[in-house]
Image: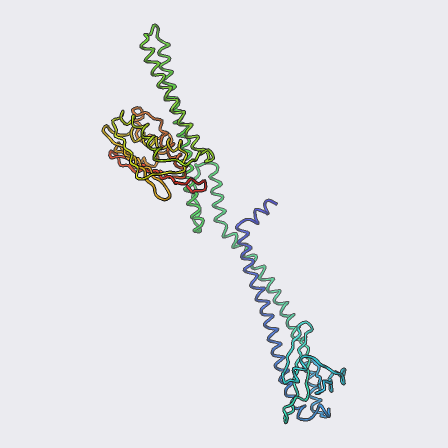
Length: 477
């Protein structure tokens, strides 16, 4: 049952069904149209021929006063002959609606008043076709040539059984042809649907092979533009998954290393104290100070990791509130100016207009604090950091610009990765965990914003953060 449902929902079945419908339906329509056209044409021909013969006979009847005398062997013979040829019945009706002659000799002397007879008395020739009972009825006025008065009516009823027999014959042949075409179309539909879906089957098989590991090369399928697009997208996705897997492995390795380094230092310091006797108090104080510093470093790494975990959670944990961004930035600058003074870096904030936005103040402050603190750390003596705040009708922008050591172009795509350091030689010289930019990026994305970097080595770096003024969970990233 599941296989049947899978097949019914497949593209192959839908292509098959589409070919079947569009292949068979026109045949049924064509068959019905041709049979209908044949029937109409055959009836029209018979009606024209019978009405022509009837008019000629009516003229002779009027000229010979046949309605009054009923004496004319020629006219009687013509009526009998015409009745025989067309397998029909001829009735003559006088001006009192009485039947005066009947080739079937059944209703002579009876009255007949019908709509067609009345119309014929008014000078009209009436043609009627009854497809249900298979007959044509022609009603012709008999007009006196001298006075142009209608003196009677000729009613001819002709069987159309011959037309019906031809129609049945045509229907049978049409049905046989249709059945043959249905078989041919089914075969074609199966072949075409199978051929057209083969690239997708190969694509699915190729992707299934990849599930066993990234060691298998994904070549993709280039048969159609659609499969080429899907293959390209899958290839890019697999490359991204490889990068993510490598990043995950690097992250685990870096976390292990970063957490292990302070512990190793503390172990070495503690073993040094334990291995010595009569150690002076100054040594204890120095070693304990170093151990305390390593504990602080360990604590900072753990706190940054916890911050990243919080950033990775859903937006349900975001505490959004209307916030005065100008005041938030002033408070942030107040906290960071002592660090800038210690590094002998000039820190300046420039606000172009008042900005109020819906943000999580704690998370956004953490992100901007990391950006500004990095600009201070990776600066040069007598350097400067310029922070600006601006907004338009939809977003507000925070720019952090410095004239520090800069970031190489080949490293700019990786600086937001966790524990990534541009220059490993600075790792011991500059405090930090390598998580600051990862935290900043996560916080900005959490606000449905974007962060961009532009940097030139030895000239400086500029980070631009864009955040929507109105927070919306449906805003696309």
